[in-house]
Image (cartoon, rainbow over all chains, first blue to last red; front, side, top):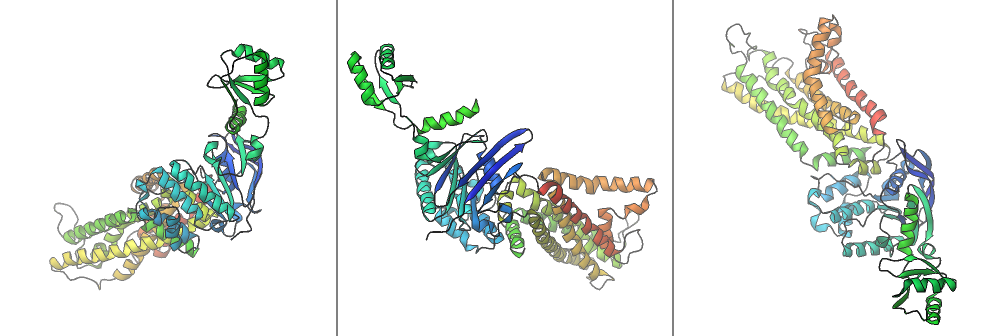
Length: 301
Length: 262
C-alpha cells in the first residue's frame, strides 16, 4: 500500500541553550517515500532539531512542522509520527510489553499492538522481561517498536544503528527501505556516514547547528574525483604532474599522492612520458566519507 | 482523557513500587491499630493520662480509621510523588509527552488515577485494621465496636483523606522534578516544618492560621463533629487539603511541566 505521506518542514529553526546556539537558523524539508539521512558529528544539533520537531523542546525561533502542523497540534500524534530517540529511556523495572502497552493505551490503540510490534522487531522472546536487563541493541529495537506502534506516516529515528551489530544494521537497512517504499517519510540521524550510506536516498548534513548540504547522495559525491598514485620518487612526479596541469593536493594515509585535474589515464601518461616509475595508480574509491568529514570539520574550526 | 487515565493505571501497576508501598502502608496501619487496641484504657502509670478506654467511641475510631490513616497517608503521598517524578527520573516522560503533547492533560490524568490508587490503599488498609484491631479488641474482652458513634462516617472520610494525600503527592512531584528532593522535602515539611510552624504561629498569636495547615486540615476532615480542637469544619478541611494538592499541581504545570524535556 502506498500512502499519501506527510512532509516534514524545518523553517528557520533556532534553539538556544543559555548562551549556546545548538541549532542556528536551520531550514530543510524531508519528503515522503524516501529515507533521508540526517548527518553530522556528535553535538552538531541533530538531536536538538528532532526534539524540537517532536514538541519536547521549545524552539527559540522558527518552526518545525509535520504536514504543516506542529507536533502539539497533531490530532493523532502517535498515529502520525513515530519516534525512536537516542535517549529513549525505559523504566528498568517495567517489561518491554508493558512499556508499549502503556503507550498504546494512552494513544487509544489496541494494547495488542504491543506484542505485534515486538514480534516485528524480533523481541517476542523477551516481551515479558524487565527492560533493565536489556542490551543496548535490544533497547534500540524496543525504541523502534515504540516508534512503529501507531503505524505512523512519518518515522523519526535518532541514531538507530547505535549498539546494533552488523546483522542488526543490515536488518534495519531493509526495514527502513521497506517503510519508505510504502510511502512513509523516514528521517534517520547518524554521526557515521557509512552506517546509513546504503540506506538513504537523500542527506541533510549539519555542522555546528547549521545546514551545510542537502541533496542526494550522488550530489554529495559529485565533483572531481581524485586519483591516487604511488611512486618511489614523489618529488619528481610532483614536478612532472604540475607541468602537465595536474595538481597534487596532498598525500593520503598510506603515502599515495592525491592528484586532481585529470583522470588515471592523464596521470599515467604524464608519468610514462617523463619516465617516472609508478607502483600504483587508482581512482579514488568514494569521496563520500571525505566530503562528509570536510563539510562537518569545516564548520568545527 | 479516559485513555490517558487508563495509561496511568498501566504505568503504576507495571512496576513493583506500588506493591512495596502498599505492603508498607498495610504493615504500619496494622501496627498502629494493634498498639492502639492493646493500650487504650490501660493505666500508663505515674502522672501519665491513659488513652480513652475501648468502651468509648473515640478509642474505637482510633483503632480503625485513625490507625489506618496514620499508617497509610505517607505511603499514598510517596506513591503520588513517584508517579510524577519517576517519569523524569527514568526519562519515560519523553514517551508520555509523545503520546500526549498537551502536557497538562497528563497531570490531570495522573491526579485522577492516583485518587483511585489512594482510595484503594485506604480501603485495603481499613480491611487490615478491622481484622487486626477487631481481633485484638475481642481478645481483650471488648466487642468489635462496629456500632460506635460516628465510626462509619469517619471511615469514609479517612478514605477520602488518604486519596487527597496522593493528590498532594502528584502536586509536589509536578512542581519538583527531582524524586529524592521531592520526597525529602515533603517528609521534612510534614514532620518538621509544619509542627515548628504551628508552634511559631501559636507563639505569635496567629493561632487562627494553624488550622489552615495541610496536616490540620487533614485532621479536621476525619473528625466530623469534634469540637475539642480548633479545627476547620470537616468539609472545609477536605477542600483545603485538596486545594493544596491542586494548587501545587497547577503551579507545577506553569513552572515545571512546560519546560524543555531533553
